[in-house]
Image (tube, rainbow, N blue to C red; front, side, top):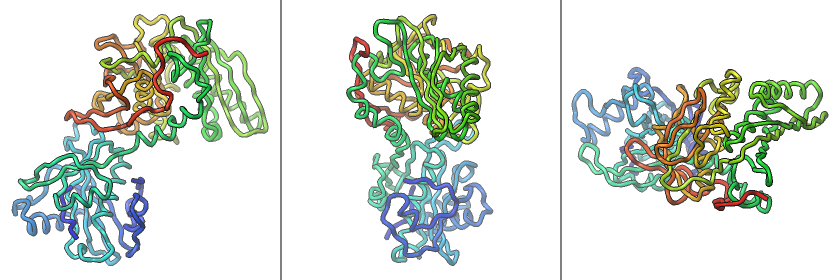
Length: 500
């Protein structure tokens, strides 16, 4: 993000007050000029007033003032200016005068290749007159706005080549120094903005578990698993509750998901589902009927009977389901070891559930019963091969769930971003953090066969390593941190025994 600048929250709007942006994105409140705004425009639209202004200012500073680029017709223009995904953010004061701008774009400008969420910031420039205006801090506000815009776009790796004179500014804004580099023969510093999307999801969904269930989680090989083997039998039990807000908002879908999540939990344990019990709370009989309609439809589709439960009326909406399955050899999440290959087997069919874009992928409601049952049986008792370890992808997403598998196994994990199978039309960030209809993470010896999961897609996309946490590996071989350590706080399971 080279620039002449001397002297996290997410944005979903195109105009931002600079002072408000500073405060929203973690800086101190600075509101000396409330009418200064930052506007967004497509970088390749050479006729857009903001793009025209940004390009003119870039040329004035980088070509005429600094001599960083040649003084020909192209000036400092490059392939990112032609990328339809690239955007520019331009700051103006209340009178419309341009104060500065910055450009954001995928590192790879080839639109024929998938956008992996690896972006770069560049062409950060502040007008000479704005550098002298006390209290504006245009450069800092533009950098903060760029970080917010990048995270809103699902960027997972955001870097910039910064002029050495601006390294201190970026450090103060939370950027990390990666090393020295050069742009057009001039010394620069490569820096990275730490994207916290995965850590925030883990903190919100799984991190409190260790303390909350202390004394209840038992001990043994299956701590942290999706289901629980019942001592003295070949029965595996699983239990999940649906968020009350989801039950209230979409009762039929909540009923369907009550079955879905429990059946998937059993599938990850290598158990064949045999029965379900439900507990439903509803304001009236009509609402309870809607929840149970969805639950009944899913039970029929998966071929698992509802053998009992409890229904209560005149109470807030709620739903929990318990599932029972059978296997003589449960697959534990704790079976992973360093050097094992990590595989994601996922159903890429479907679309985002209406009202839950970026959060819930619905691949199951339009599948046939035969397809659903084939996926659930992927590593079941009759499977030709069963992996060493498995977990189904939960509300912690692919990365958080991989962190749980690694935590139970006493290892760390690396996920190859480019190798993860994902549906078309989804960003990598959304896919790695959403709740998918069916997605199973397994760890096994390199070269082991893929689960026989019917219509699901399967690919090796990482490995378990010594240590803890989850890192993302990028096409250039670089590793970026995703989850720093254990996800749940339950720690590694022991090598033998079962829950009491």
